[in-house]
Image (tube, rainbow, N blue to C red):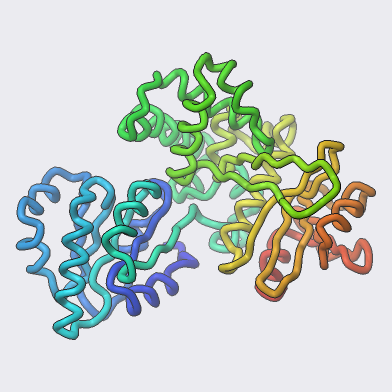
Length: 389
């Protein structure tokens, strides 16, 4: 059992808030984490995609009232959104009786609908947490190398598979299930062939500012439809968009967001890269490494830190701009090299965004000062340093 970084935070939230929503992509381990929680009350679990559990909720108020002394775990809550008003009523009733806080833990993999439904009925009674695939800090042991995590990604079944071939097969099945089942359930009428083409084309533009019109033209559909599909993929925690840095500047800046597949293993599957040697020799290697590091960093950023990318039409860019609550601006460049060098482009861009510190992220190695305000360090060292900045 791999200890999840979110475990202690989840227990703390359950002790403070009547309803906690644990959100994240399918198969990241939400159910495993929920059932492994050590609480001071018994747990009762319902999977709302299982017909037998749905049948138990024919009269949901009567059924759930039987478990007033339990932590009730409702998995895939978005399947029955009509439960939200009932949860509000039960929470308020139990509050009036002075019962302990922990009552409902709801799990979901569709952010937009879930947040919309719950925010309208459970305002002031619910707290949200996002569970991501296994992060590098969670699998950091001598047997779990960074390259293995980068190649396979962080989905537990993929990362822990006995061979690279088995891992890739799991990811192939995962992508297929979304294309053939989960996306059509959200109202997408496109064929599986078109959806896979879309996913593959986005994979080959990892870390780029997508040209929606060009993408739509290649697929033979309109731009609004492509935008809708990408929004759904982001809502399912599969894609991440990194907004452009925007401040008063005389330079002509690129205003479009960059798009990344959040899990490097899914990216490699879509690009048909099954072994680390194939990744290292592929033109996608640099962008894959950038997206991998970016995801590890962003999922570990403390609250109220903001992230963006900087790029001018002349080509000057910074991969990641982090702004802290203390007013610091960090310029982060991600390079897969052990001998990074400062470039005029990085220096000029850092001045434009008025960065207070600069960092070059390397795969490994001891920290190396590149200037008075710029330092090169490994990904793990940088992640350890973030809370101190």
